[in-house]
Image 1 (cartoon, rainbow, N blue to C red):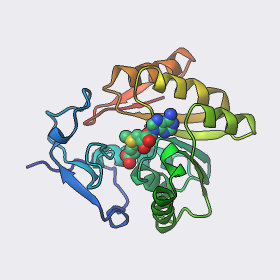
Image 2: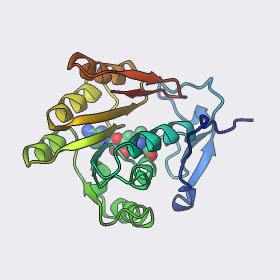
Image 3: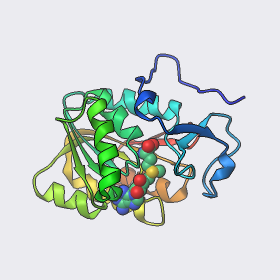
Length: 214
Ligand SMILES: C[S@@+](CC[C@H](N)C(=O)[O-])C[C@H]1O[C@@H](n2cnc3c(N)ncnc32)[C@H](O)[C@@H]1O
């Protein structure tokens, strides 16, 4: 039976209560070519769209621990889906969080997402941006926004992750960190390489879908 794995000395905040529609599914529901079906960690998704997976518990613990290093700093999330990763970023204690997610343009989606943000304690610190990256990221950056911590889990296809990487790069504070989910996809790996080529130190976490960090 699949069991959650969380590394020694890491933890996850208990946020399951905010996601009553989160359930465990067999990975065969997804046809995405880069989903690693041979890893025996639970795959969770929203019952209404099981083919879009949430980051797993191991990945959530890495996201949470990493963002906690930037408590009191500004964060950016690209691709938030129903707010599972967002709730972890809020719980980490970032001073502010900009969430770029085009689905937030749908009023019902946004209302449900706002409830998650509120119940996670982020109502005053979170800005929902119902637009796509990279355009929204550049718009915010050109308006003067700067970020210390960025989580990228948005457009996974083709040049999408590289475009996201290149969009945020100019708007980082001098000390910053970026995490990519789904590094197993070569398209996402190329996004991480963009940071490496810009002189950042990069590393990969061996999780179910792998997490890249720069
Ligand atoms: C895999 S889901 C993110 C899952 C989320 N990180 C979690 O663990 O709960 C990918 C999300 O990226 C969004 N997305 C796709 N293209 C995007 C773009 N160009 N800019 C921002 N978000 C995008 C999709 O709408 C979707 O919600």
